[in-house]
Image 1: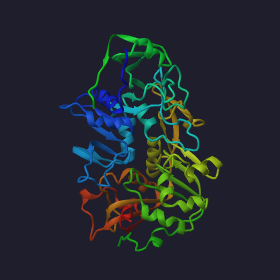
Image 2: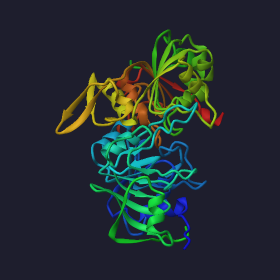
Image 3: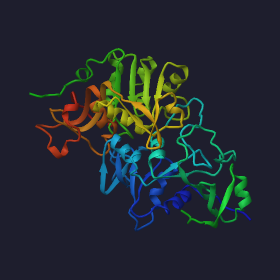
Image 4: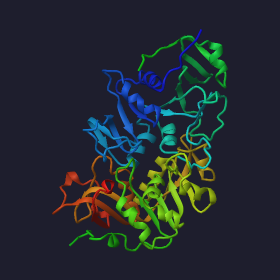
Length: 225
Length: 226
């Protein structure tokens, strides 16, 4: 058997399918912001950006571009009807105060108890960058992580214990990778979906902590986006 | 008569000196006081503490301040320079020329808000069990461990808005407001560069920051066009 790992866009498509009608969602920089392109039709999902926007619309077309209207990643954005703009402290009142249903963030490592490390990968000569990650990790009702299942050299990122400095302890509820959808439960990692053609043993071998497979574990399928 | 308009950058930055703390508004390229930043190396400002969400903007627009080692401490949520190579602030962080208080962005914003609101400190759950709050006072509230964060204030805030009137009332376009809204109240002298100082006074629905928080306004073109 052989399998084809998901692309970044496919991981984003899969994560976006779990955003429900009425949710307020913060998308982190990098892969998470791609989810905005794959929101299922017919669902009203309000996107929050920590620079102070609720109701982020699609990325601006060249005709729409306005340099004074950006998201937290400096992308020029549009607003949806009903959008609001506010101060940084109000933005984090929204985040820390429990008013965000889901945050989708990138990750370096996730531990089986839900610990998250996503801000300091010990890059030599480079300064630290926290941004809003720590506040989102403690404040959002759910923290879902999108990342490659393994590092470039093949090391696992799903671990018993994080090696890098933590962003927050015990906060992650679900991880979307290029190989699987994995929940973090009181009993550790539980696989909900696995790529077609990838065996359970192979997935376990690519993971640094024990995996349990849900009784209804399904196939991780996405369109060619 | 209340009139906070100033005609020159020299006048706008008058009073900056040794050992001062300066806050900078701006996020994602919006609300960055680029004109005022560019003028800083030409002032007597020295031994500075800078409070800016990202150190990078000052590095971009006032590089000489770092070259001349006039920034000694930074409070920021991001201290990463552009590109893969080390930037001058990263080199100075490594060699100890520059010290850093790295803060989660929400704690950073709230410390500034508190500073402007007369609140000396507050507890937050953000950062608990991470190295960034090591050594800070911890206390449990409602079963949740929190950490004490102290307020930030400054001698000067430099920021950019779209429009102002002579009272110092400010109107922002898009996401220009970001940290500036909180920083305006947290400094003794808040200086705002704007695209337009209007004739007369702004109508109430257009006032995003009450002029009471602002000391000086100066009309300067959008430096991103330069």
